[in-house]
Length: 105
Image 1 (cartoon, rainbow, N blue to C red):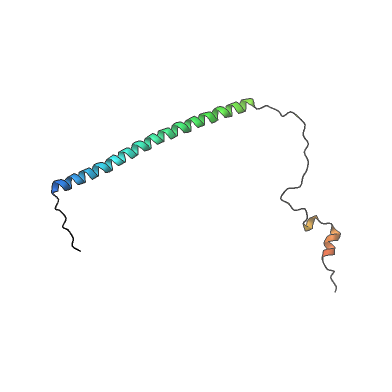
Image 2 (cartoon, rainbow, N blue to C red):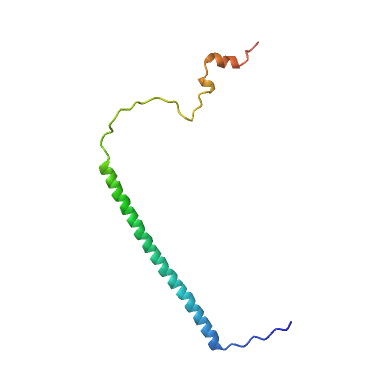
């Protein structure tokens, strides 16, 4: 297969290509930094607004809470939920002795 010879470019063409490439890269960084700054400002404004709303809500909640609880309540003693009531220590003594074989000398 025969390759066609590439045309010779002048130094003006090469200089124009380099300058336009540099200009595109610099413009890209400039646009990216402007977009980043705009998004940062929008994020800070939205975050500040949410913080302010949360602050107002906490002040309302603290002003609305009563100093005492009305009503009656009974405290019942319940076994812990994660504890198994069927362990060896919970069995009566005669059941524990019955499960082990008697020792014969």
